[in-house]
Amino acid sequence: MQPIMTVREIEDFLDREFPQIHADGRVLSIADLRPGGLTMRFDPQERHLRPGATISGPSMVMVADVAAYAAILAHLGPVALAVTTSLNVNFLRKPEMQPMFCDCRILKLGKRLAVIDAILRQDGLQDAVAQATVTYSIPPVGR
Image (cartoon, rainbow, N blue to C red; front, side, top):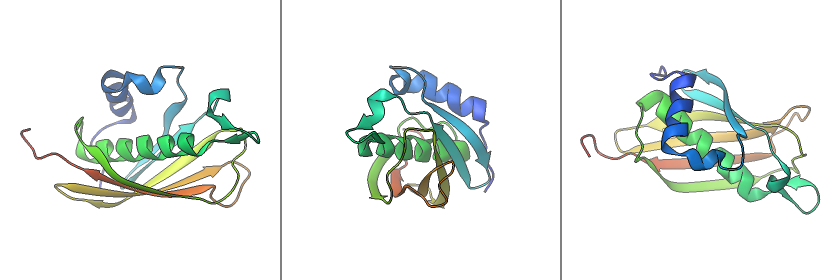
């Protein structure tokens, strides 16, 4: 499955429709767009930490959710009303205060449902720090 939006088109859409994701500064960007997937870069800041100098769970969930949404947009087009219906995350390792990459792979992209596998990694760590399965409901065409 080939993307139908470019990186620039996706980022422009997110900036226009969801400016709140950059309210305290831009920390998310698309690092790679490919058939059936997308990689988003997350540059964490102090506000994304929890005690122990590790990136917080809610911050990683946000990255997985936004990256999955961007992957769906890339392959379906600008559907503002697609919504998360399920997000299950497994925290695997302690992430350091350094950039994180969320590699998304589309498992299913149907008329009404999309399912994404999201793997969160950091440079220098061979293994994933977290894995999420994200399901989105896609609104009917014409609504």
